[in-house]
Image (cartoon, rainbow, N blue to C red; front, top):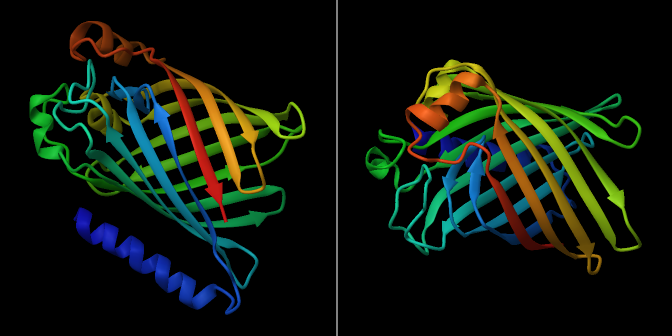
Length: 273
């Protein structure tokens, strides 16, 4: 089913562009790469070692004043040993997760809405049976919707993901972000959020069919706007498992030493045109 979903995602994106984008519209293109000391997803350490994460994003205005976008982001392991982590060893210099997103953004009153399809491709999914995941992991796809607004210069948001493909379960996140100027070209971005998993999503992410509050996550990212097109970022990020049963699974039952309270660092650069 995964290949059909990815193909449909691309087809819908191009069809939308042809039908709803003004003839003279020019795309906004952004690309960049981030070096991270770990790869953590929804509280689970996927790779407990250095990774490189390139990203490409393309956006277009629509005739109604909204926006459509397509993004591709990937994770490349930089070492064969993934450490105490979910992903299998042995793939240095290779992409171990590839994500594609097709989205539609619209403003409704004071709220910014963004929804679409999010597809995950795991090239080494058949090897997961030999890793901490204990069973094969195929690619999968989700529909998502994010709503945000501005309150006292901060941005509260709610994000809903529902996996209709392999998982048939939901993941929900609420948080607050803020960008604080420190000078003409320097700013700091703050983000704190809390995730909730359904039992089906818990089984997929943690091999434990438990629903509850999952990962409490926070980050501080220092941003330097070198010029109009170039931004440099360094950040510190942290995550902790909140649900007692899931936390006990990490510490005692089945996570095989995977850290349930990881801290990691990032450095990246991006360009926009």
